[in-house]
Image (tube, rainbow, N blue to C red; front, side):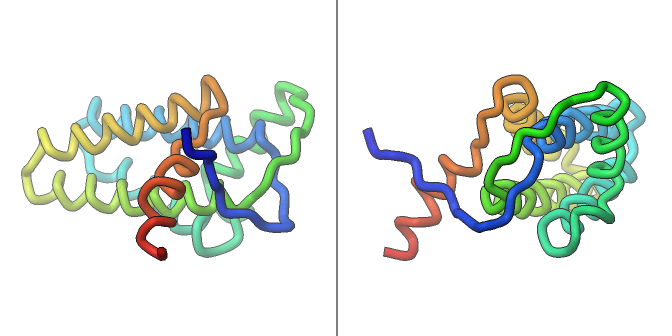
Length: 145
């Protein structure tokens, strides 16, 4: 089996926060469909944009995750930041597609993409599995070769 290759950087992030970010992602996607509102995917899209292309300190989801981690007294576990940025960029694209499909009235299609996002976020939250590394290894890297 091919070995997974993830993007790497010198910067570290707290794994506990990334897992809590995934938990809040699940909640926001679910809220969007429970309340039949595009506002939740749009909020999540903006949040993913901030985490992917700006300073994650300004992300509302990251802020909530930091507060919850402090409240629960979770210890820091440093991990590489680059795979999480790649995953945030994927999340941004997915939430953009979800919002556009929802606005255009393609509810079933938007729910399918949202289900995939929730599945990826559940793997991250529950098991610490970053699907972004698999996508990077099997789809992004071969495109560059």
